[in-house]
Length: 220
Image 1 (cartoon, rainbow, N blue to C red):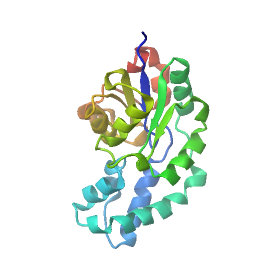
Image 2: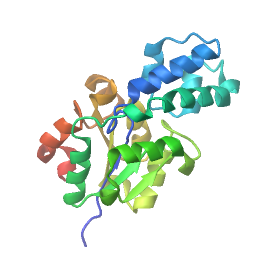
Image 3: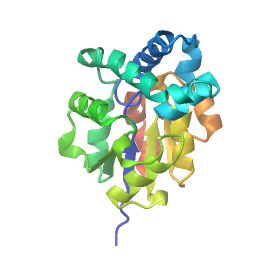
Image 4: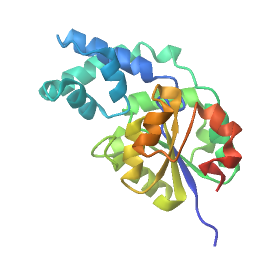
C-alpha cells in the first residue's frame, strides 16, 4: 500500500507577495489608533495570526483593542488587493507537486475574504486537494491548529507531510505537530533565522525550491 504524501503550503509571503503589504497595513492601523510601533518589529511578527501579532508587537498593551486594530488593518490591506502578485515559481511549484503525486494543501490562517482573494490570484483550484483559512481553527500560528486542521482535511499523517512557509511562525506551528518545514526567504525572513527555528531546508523562493526539488525534502 503506497504512502499518502502531502505538501502544505502557506500563502502569504510564500506563494503571494504580501508580507510587506501586511506590515504597512498593520503599521497604519497602529498609527490610526495612536500607537507608534516600528515597522521592522511588525514585519518580524507577520505570519502570526492577528491576536498573536497585536500582543507581540505591543507587549500586550493593545490586546483589548484587537477587533478595532484588525478591522483597520483589513480596510487598509484590502486597498492593495488589485495589485497582488505571485512570487517567483509559486504556481509552477504547486503544479509540480500535484503532478508528482503529492496531496497539495493550502494551509493559510488568512481570513476568509483575504483567502478568497489569494486563491483567485493563485488560480490553482484544479490542483488543490484541501484548504484552510482562519475560520477553520480556534487559534492561529504559531499555534499548530491550522496545520493540524490541514492534515485532517487532507487525510495526512504528520510524518508524511511537508510544510512550505516563509516565517518562523510557520516553522514553529508545523513543528508542534511533527511536520517538517521547508523555509522560503521570499517573505523577508533570512535562511539563518528559518533554520534556527527548525526548518529542515531553506531556499530563496519557490522558484529556487522547484529548481532544486530533486535534492529537497519534496523529493521523497
